[in-house]
Length: 108
DNA sequence: ACTATGACGCTAT
DNA sequence: GATAGCGCCATAG
Image 1: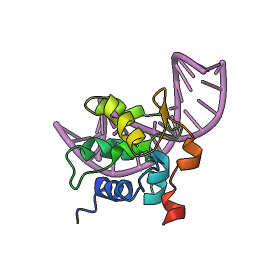
Image 2 (image 1 turned 30 degrees about the horizontal axis):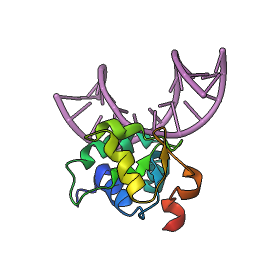
Image 3 (image 1 turned 120 degrees about the vertical axis):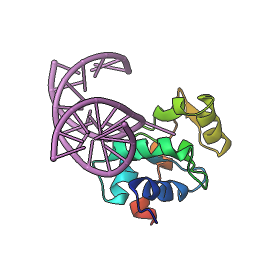
Image 4 (image 1 turned 45 degrees about the vertical axis):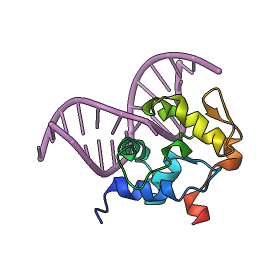
């Protein structure tokens, strides 16, 4: 394994259950890099070329805002994917984010 | 080794 | 509520 930070992030993201979402900070913390939330997002940039597919659309910021939606094509794909999985999104923000937020540290 | 960058997080104003 | 600034840390050049 490359054991790169990216791959570790990808693994966590791939473990996110359908209909749930996670935050960059939570994932970073689960990896033991609590302060490297930026790295998680940075890794997501590679998610587009990563295999197997990484449900990056399930990863949002601590506010539940779809910050990275512009990295999708089209940018509306992220919101549609979430709604498709039962996640309600309003104004580029996950509704009831606190309720559906998935904590890797707790679930794992 | 150093600098620049980045899908973040938090606090202050 | 919106904007601005700082910190935090891994990757790329």
